[in-house]
Length: 398
Ligand SMILES: NC(=O)c1ccc[n+]([C@@H]2O[C@H](COP(=O)([O-])OP(=O)(O)OC[C@H]3O[C@@H](n4cnc5c(N)ncnc54)[C@H](O)[C@@H]3O)[C@@H](O)[C@H]2O)c1
Ligand SMILES: [Fe+2]
Image 1: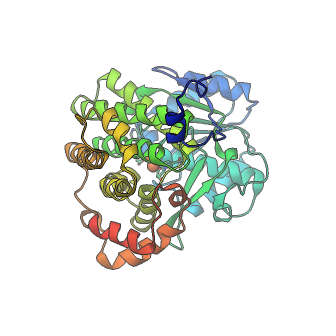
Image 2: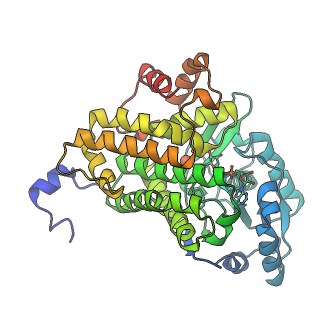
């Protein structure tokens, strides 16, 4: 119906009618929603749920609440928390052994993107065996995996709704992307209460990650009508609320809106996929074990300028979502304004100026650029990029 009402000009501007698909978990969202995870586990047939978390989140105290709720539901949870940020291949394989030893069933992840990705990796191995790195790429998971319930404790990655699992390859010092419908969790329980214990730097980093997801998904070659509004909404929400969560960390409304931003950005990018910022960031993060959102925050303005030089029009709605006053300015100007606004937001929340400040050396660039070309996220970047283009982008971001 909607399509029939568009004018011929609108239809040609939006391209031919394309098939769209949209996947998403069941989502429970709102303050105090955490107990829903235990209900969901029982409903999905759990007896010995495998609870994945990490030392930082354990210390914040949230897993203790979840474990009490699981026990109240008559279940016998097993906890595994031996993993580090940017989860490593061997850590996930250790987790899988713990899952088998514990005779576990449903997998729950309570933590940031690292915990959620590790939980997905354990579930993947539980049903498919082998080494985690064997699954790099798209749709290489043959057997259905155990039910997944995710509870994000950061407002950033969207891993709780996404079909991605990002793992550090410790031999090649890079991050690999495992992608497939099988990795979309069954249930995502988003309780924004859990965001208040994030340290300030993590709040800033994960907020910038969500902004990157929104912008990359909106301009992606795989974007569509079902993802565009989530992407724009995420961009507007991060822009409008991240500074407030830095100034007043206990403001529940701003936390709730940041949780929504991360969620909507996740829904957009898991369906529209990402672009060059993530393809490049995975290499830097894998080499130096750096916070993902910080690297994205540094790279994003440069990738915006690169992509916008080719096709600036998609940046006009992004500028509007960020509340930038275009006053009829040409699209090329919108590109510059968006890039500047992203950098200004980064400055406001403490994102380092360039890659050199976070430990990247000029001599690293050729290898980083070469690895970027093999990252699945680059395939949906709106502008084709050669190895020279990527090298130039790394150099300008130093
Ligand atoms: N699968 C996906 O779709 C996807 C998307 C984007 C990023 N990622 C991946 O996610 C990872 C980054 O995740 P992240 O940015 O959420 O951070 P993280 O999970 O790496 O956590 C960083 C640190 O913060 C601590 N922490 C997390 N939540 C906390 C809380 N509420 N209170 C106190 N401490 C807390 C953790 O213990 C950890 O030490 C990267 O590996 C990245 O590649 C995955
Ligand atoms: Fe990300």
